[in-house]
Image 1 (tube, one colour):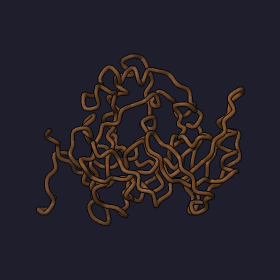
Image 2 (cartoon, one colour):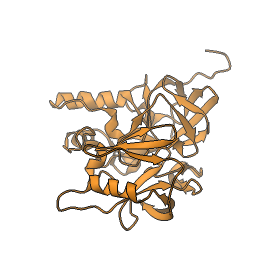
Image 3 (cartoon, rainbow, N blue to C red):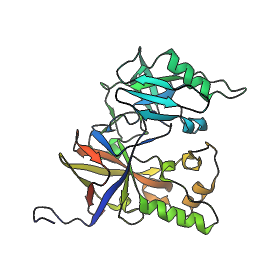
Length: 295
């Protein structure tokens, strides 16, 4: 370690990077991703909405888990069982629309009738037809994370639930899988928790206990600040491979992950905001330093 580099309490490395081009659909794992003001480039840039413009997720439509995006040079390709591939150009949109994600009304662009039909057809079930549209975030719109949690920092995000990035660790997943195994259940993958950045080399839930993540990139240091523990809805109970739900993950987390910081909610992973490093490239294998936070 050079004299100029401060010694951190914790040294981790980035082990995996995921981006979710369409909210609640499958993630794309990539070896490197551009960091932007709103998180990883293209993350939650797309979203499905109902006829009222209200967002839809796999909470209501678990088959969204089976829609698998692929990133191409100028487009994202959506694939799903029994469907032809849907090609969506990054730079081609139709009319501007207003949509809602949780309590926020935001500006977006409709992705057109073909995309809407594809999305609606795949997610309709017998007796439960869906009338859905696919939209993409308007990059001119500034959607801010809750200032209550960011300590007054104006941190941006697109269609994520509320923050630019979700960080989790291999250590946290290993502890959960140990607890599942002790009850006779199979191991689960980190994909259930939909993180953007997975860290290796730290203890279980150390990501909860640090004040900042300092990532050494080729362009200099990027700094992410963990601001809010991620409260877990039923989505981790949904197997991403089958879209079927079973309760053991949620039930197990409830035995040890009630978090006083969010009124006893069940948490796994930390929501983070971008402090510095916009336009830097994050890569698997990059070192991450962090110091413990003292309340």
